[in-house]
Every structure is written in structure tokens, then in C-alpha cells.
Length: 294
Ligand SMILES: [Zn+2]
Image (cartoon, rainbow, N blue to C red; front, side):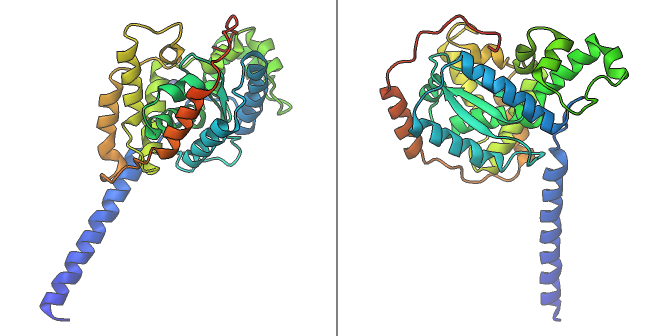
């Protein structure tokens, strides 16, 4: 080998090594840890399924194939990039026929997006950001983490004596016995630290799926500017997803850990068509008194 070739090999090896170290750095910096949880993942799914059935008895679904198919397709494509993948998750995406801007996730992967959220999003990346954020709540298992903490606080003896999970079946009835009414809201109300974690997972998913990871934070910011000071009424999004601080800055800080800059997906043709289609549909029904789930 000539000295020149030798130098090139050394340079190539150096480049490879630094690329490997960079990949390792991205991989090690961003690990997403789930909190204390008494449930198994199949129990998350079972609890989510039961709660979803209840949600659908109380809230109207948007009966529209085009919109539902598009949302489900987009949501499913993003799940491939979620951290802590588990084959058990149900991953179901449905549109609620509601003029209230909101979206929520039940344990096990049951995700609902209100039609007004699609109408209000400015791009596919923003809608993807909302879905990725909700998927973050699912894979970080925030609902059953909250339920677990409540159970530990309220019924430590039952838990210590092995009452919980003895036969491996955990139903929402068992939970209601343990925790009383309001179990559903427990599964849905997210703390600010959970919001920060869902934002972080959301940005991670967006980056890996080639969407601008800032799109989700931008959606939240746009909402805040459009509806200053409002967190209730037609905007339960912001009360169900309390702002953990400066969302945009938090995502900006995370971006260097996600990986090198790359061109983001910016084709909004399908999104624009679906959004125009949703806007052309008859308006949503007048809301009934809100059930416990909101
Ligand atoms: Zn959230």
C-alpha cells in the first residue's frame, strides 16, 4: 500500500468511526423511559378498548371514509418510527365529528382526532405532529402510569396483598371498584411532565418519518396565538395538553440529538384535499353535555 493509499484508508476509517460514534450518540442520548406502571401492555390494550367503546357511545364519530382512511394511514405510517415498539398495541385512529379542537389517546393505541383539528392544521406535518404526540402518550403509557400512581396512593394494601392482577384480567370495572368514578379522566389527563415527554417522543417520530420535528410545537403555538388566553370551550386541546413551558424551544433543543438535518416532507396535496373535503361536510352536531372523558 502506498503512503497515499494508507492515508486514505486511515481517513476513511476515521470518517466511519466518527459516523458510528455520532449514530451511537443519537441512539444513547434519546432513550425514552416509561414511568412506574402496574399494568402489562395487553392490559393497556384491553383497558383502552373498553374505554374506546365507552367514548364511542358518548361522542359522535365522523362517518366519512375518505377522512378516516387518510388519518388512519398517516397515523399507522408514523407508528413504525415510535420508540419502544410493541406488537401488542392496537393502533386505531378515528375522527370525532366535533367542532372542538382536540385529540386524545387511550392506553394501548386508541387515538381520536376531532375534525376541527384537521380543519385547523396548516399542513400534513402539523397533523402528523399531533398524531405523533398522541402516539407518544401511548408508548410512554401515560394513562396507565397515572392509574398506577393513583392506585398506589389510594389502595396500597390491595396492591401489596396481590389483589391486583391476580387472575391477569384487569377490566375498567375492576379499576372503577378500586378507584371509584372518574377513571376515564384519569386515563386522559396529562401532567406537564407527560406533555413534555409526549412532545419529545413526537419530535423523535416526526424526525424519523422525515417530517419537520418542529411542526407539532408550531401547531400548539398557532393555537395559542389564534385563541389567546383560551383553554376551555372550543379549545380543550390546550387544557388536555397543558403547555409544559416553551414547546418550540424544547423541540429546538432536542433537534441536535435527533440527527443531522435532512430535507423534510412537504407534499401537502393529499392533506389539502382531505382538509377541503372535511370543510365541505355538514357541520358537526351541537355538543351534548360533556362526559367524563374530556
Ligand atoms: Zn398531550
